[in-house]
Length: 168
Image (tube, rainbow, N blue to C red; front, side, top):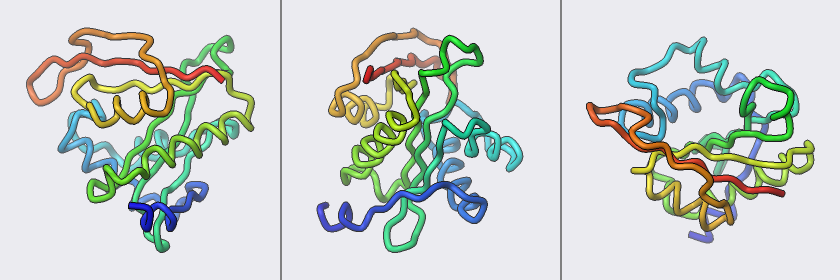
């Protein structure tokens, strides 16, 4: 595990990374409850998700040996000025790179960047079935602040969603 962690780097997301990130996200759309999209999204919609329009919100690729293995970002929580110092985080890793400590390293990287950009709170919105993500955010010191019952539906089932937050 330490060997792979020592090779992990983060770079600002650029257009040249788009297809790799799109493919990673598509995997989760089709095979998991990490995203509540029900089918593959258009590249135009993906660009609007992957590339935050506000320069204070940032998106990064996660690489090892110059290969994109994931995507991490913090983006606008709500479109009201009172929430300007709150951001929502998202991390997606290629499935073969999960469970190796990369998610925690990515989260720490996002937190450092968000602090630098003046954010006060980071939120994660997680499907309650996604125990690995819940474990990651709890390990990183996030606290559960909301539990929405049967708020989403995917794969023919209603699912709970939980929010976790960290206050800086």
